[in-house]
Image (cartoon, rainbow, N blue to C red; front, side):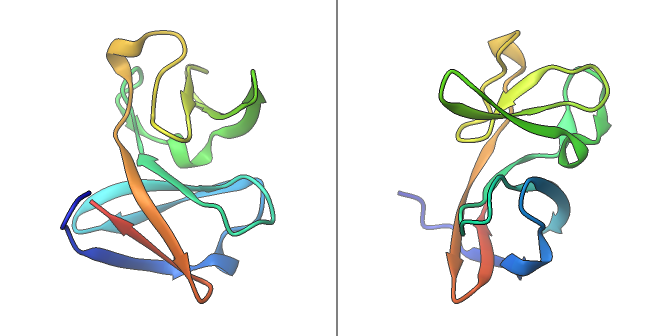
Length: 110
């Protein structure tokens, strides 16, 4: 368990269900995803390691083999929301961040 501080990002309602947004946290671009109307949010690095562009927050969320993934909008590689694992090439997996939603507010731990 990390002792790093939590960083307030935004209200849960600021992210429409089924979409992602980019947030700047301590100078880092973090992609936040809210797959459903539930208060479950995932956070990954926003940088697509294949395209070297900060675009993952604009990717499409989908389900594959019972897990939630985001497909990069540029080269279409899939990254698992829970841990950033890249389906096509594990060498290019992303860092995933801890997220908490308390009283309708999203916070991440870097």
